[in-house]
Length: 170
Figure (cartoon, rainbow, N blue to C red):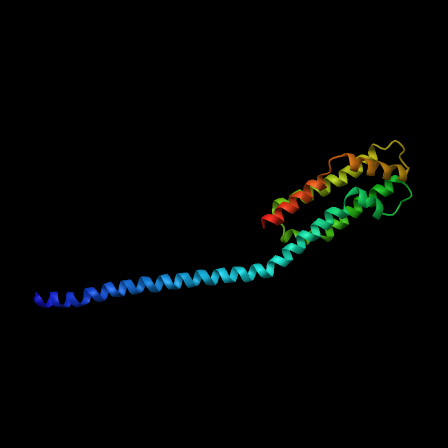
Protein backbone atom coordinates (compact mmCIF):
# COMPACT_ATOMS: atom_id res chain seq x y z
CA UNK A 1 0.00 0.00 0.00
CA UNK A 2 2.85 2.35 0.79
CA UNK A 3 4.28 1.67 -2.63
CA UNK A 4 1.07 2.78 -4.32
CA UNK A 5 1.05 5.99 -2.27
CA UNK A 6 4.68 6.61 -3.20
CA UNK A 7 3.86 6.18 -6.90
CA UNK A 8 0.81 8.46 -6.62
CA UNK A 9 2.92 11.01 -4.75
CA UNK A 10 5.18 11.31 -7.80
CA UNK A 11 2.63 10.80 -10.59
CA UNK A 12 -0.03 13.24 -9.34
CA UNK A 13 2.22 16.36 -9.45
CA UNK A 14 3.45 15.29 -12.88
CA UNK A 15 -0.16 14.98 -14.12
CA UNK A 16 -1.03 18.40 -12.69
CA UNK A 17 2.04 19.96 -14.31
CA UNK A 18 1.27 18.16 -17.57
CA UNK A 19 -2.32 19.46 -17.57
CA UNK A 20 -1.16 23.01 -16.84
CA UNK A 21 1.47 22.76 -19.58
CA UNK A 22 -1.12 21.38 -22.03
CA UNK A 23 -3.59 24.22 -21.36
CA UNK A 24 -0.86 26.86 -21.65
CA UNK A 25 0.37 25.43 -24.95
CA UNK A 26 -3.22 25.13 -26.23
CA UNK A 27 -3.91 28.76 -25.30
CA UNK A 28 -0.68 29.88 -27.00
CA UNK A 29 -1.51 28.07 -30.24
CA UNK A 30 -5.10 29.36 -30.19
CA UNK A 31 -3.83 32.93 -29.86
CA UNK A 32 -1.32 32.35 -32.66
CA UNK A 33 -4.05 31.02 -34.96
CA UNK A 34 -6.22 34.02 -34.10
CA UNK A 35 -3.38 36.44 -34.88
CA UNK A 36 -2.66 34.66 -38.17
CA UNK A 37 -6.34 34.85 -39.14
CA UNK A 38 -6.40 38.57 -38.40
CA UNK A 39 -3.26 39.13 -40.48
CA UNK A 40 -4.73 37.09 -43.32
CA UNK A 41 -7.97 39.10 -43.18
CA UNK A 42 -5.98 42.35 -43.22
CA UNK A 43 -4.02 41.15 -46.22
CA UNK A 44 -7.18 40.03 -48.03
CA UNK A 45 -8.87 43.31 -47.20
CA UNK A 46 -5.94 45.33 -48.51
CA UNK A 47 -6.20 43.44 -51.81
CA UNK A 48 -9.99 43.58 -51.97
CA UNK A 49 -10.60 47.12 -50.73
CA UNK A 50 -9.21 49.02 -53.76
CA UNK A 51 -11.42 46.98 -56.09
CA UNK A 52 -14.42 47.63 -53.89
CA UNK A 53 -13.74 51.38 -53.88
CA UNK A 54 -13.33 51.32 -57.64
CA UNK A 55 -16.67 49.53 -58.00
CA UNK A 56 -18.40 52.17 -55.90
CA UNK A 57 -16.73 54.92 -57.92
CA UNK A 58 -17.85 53.32 -61.17
CA UNK A 59 -21.41 52.98 -59.94
CA UNK A 60 -21.42 56.62 -58.81
CA UNK A 61 -20.27 57.55 -62.30
CA UNK A 62 -22.97 55.29 -63.77
CA UNK A 63 -25.64 57.09 -61.73
CA UNK A 64 -24.36 60.45 -62.91
CA UNK A 65 -24.16 59.35 -66.54
CA UNK A 66 -27.76 58.10 -66.69
CA UNK A 67 -29.33 61.19 -65.15
CA UNK A 68 -31.82 62.44 -67.75
CA UNK A 69 -30.32 65.93 -67.77
CA UNK A 70 -26.92 64.44 -68.61
CA UNK A 71 -28.34 62.04 -71.18
CA UNK A 72 -29.96 64.91 -73.08
CA UNK A 73 -26.52 66.43 -73.57
CA UNK A 74 -24.81 63.15 -74.39
CA UNK A 75 -27.25 61.31 -76.65
CA UNK A 76 -27.19 62.77 -80.19
CA UNK A 77 -30.38 64.20 -81.65
CA UNK A 78 -32.52 61.77 -83.59
CA UNK A 79 -34.92 62.26 -86.48
CA UNK A 80 -37.97 61.92 -84.25
CA UNK A 81 -38.92 61.63 -80.59
CA UNK A 82 -39.55 57.87 -80.81
CA UNK A 83 -36.02 57.24 -82.02
CA UNK A 84 -34.62 59.65 -79.43
CA UNK A 85 -36.50 57.83 -76.65
CA UNK A 86 -35.13 54.52 -77.91
CA UNK A 87 -31.59 55.92 -78.07
CA UNK A 88 -31.78 57.25 -74.51
CA UNK A 89 -33.19 54.03 -73.05
CA UNK A 90 -30.58 52.08 -75.00
CA UNK A 91 -27.79 54.34 -73.69
CA UNK A 92 -28.92 53.66 -70.11
CA UNK A 93 -29.00 49.92 -70.74
CA UNK A 94 -25.54 49.95 -72.35
CA UNK A 95 -24.13 51.86 -69.37
CA UNK A 96 -25.69 49.34 -67.01
CA UNK A 97 -24.45 46.35 -68.99
CA UNK A 98 -20.96 47.85 -69.03
CA UNK A 99 -20.98 48.04 -65.21
CA UNK A 100 -22.73 44.74 -64.54
CA UNK A 101 -19.62 43.08 -63.10
CA UNK A 102 -19.44 45.67 -60.30
CA UNK A 103 -22.22 43.87 -58.44
CA UNK A 104 -19.57 41.45 -57.17
CA UNK A 105 -18.12 44.19 -54.97
CA UNK A 106 -21.28 46.09 -54.05
CA UNK A 107 -23.67 45.12 -51.28
CA UNK A 108 -26.77 43.32 -52.63
CA UNK A 109 -29.19 45.89 -51.17
CA UNK A 110 -27.26 48.72 -52.79
CA UNK A 111 -27.22 46.89 -56.11
CA UNK A 112 -31.01 46.47 -55.93
CA UNK A 113 -31.43 50.21 -55.28
CA UNK A 114 -29.20 51.04 -58.27
CA UNK A 115 -31.04 48.54 -60.48
CA UNK A 116 -34.42 49.98 -59.44
CA UNK A 117 -33.19 53.53 -60.07
CA UNK A 118 -32.00 52.50 -63.54
CA UNK A 119 -35.41 51.00 -64.34
CA UNK A 120 -37.21 54.04 -62.91
CA UNK A 121 -35.08 56.33 -65.08
CA UNK A 122 -35.91 54.32 -68.19
CA UNK A 123 -39.60 54.46 -67.24
CA UNK A 124 -39.29 58.21 -66.58
CA UNK A 125 -38.05 58.73 -70.14
CA UNK A 126 -40.82 56.55 -71.59
CA UNK A 127 -43.49 58.30 -69.52
CA UNK A 128 -42.18 61.72 -70.49
CA UNK A 129 -42.34 60.64 -74.13
CA UNK A 130 -45.90 59.32 -73.75
CA UNK A 131 -47.07 62.58 -72.15
CA UNK A 132 -45.58 64.71 -74.93
CA UNK A 133 -48.23 66.64 -76.87
CA UNK A 134 -46.22 67.00 -80.09
CA UNK A 135 -45.18 63.42 -80.72
CA UNK A 136 -42.35 64.00 -83.19
CA UNK A 137 -40.69 67.14 -81.80
CA UNK A 138 -37.33 66.04 -80.40
CA UNK A 139 -36.54 69.46 -78.95
CA UNK A 140 -39.87 69.52 -77.10
CA UNK A 141 -39.03 66.04 -75.80
CA UNK A 142 -35.63 67.23 -74.58
CA UNK A 143 -37.18 70.26 -72.91
CA UNK A 144 -39.81 68.07 -71.23
CA UNK A 145 -37.12 65.70 -69.95
CA UNK A 146 -35.06 68.55 -68.50
CA UNK A 147 -38.12 70.23 -66.97
CA UNK A 148 -39.54 67.01 -65.49
CA UNK A 149 -36.14 65.85 -64.23
CA UNK A 150 -35.55 69.11 -62.37
CA UNK A 151 -39.03 69.18 -60.82
CA UNK A 152 -39.53 65.48 -60.08
CA UNK A 153 -37.93 63.52 -57.27
CA UNK A 154 -35.50 61.29 -59.14
CA UNK A 155 -34.73 57.79 -57.78
CA UNK A 156 -31.15 58.29 -58.96
CA UNK A 157 -30.60 60.81 -56.16
CA UNK A 158 -31.72 58.22 -53.61
CA UNK A 159 -29.49 55.62 -55.23
CA UNK A 160 -26.50 57.95 -54.96
CA UNK A 161 -27.22 58.59 -51.27
CA UNK A 162 -27.57 54.86 -50.65
CA UNK A 163 -24.27 54.25 -52.42
CA UNK A 164 -22.53 56.92 -50.34
CA UNK A 165 -23.92 55.56 -47.06
CA UNK A 166 -22.94 52.02 -48.01
CA UNK A 167 -19.32 52.92 -48.75
CA UNK A 168 -19.06 54.84 -45.48
CA UNK A 169 -20.28 51.82 -43.52
CA UNK A 170 -17.93 49.45 -45.30
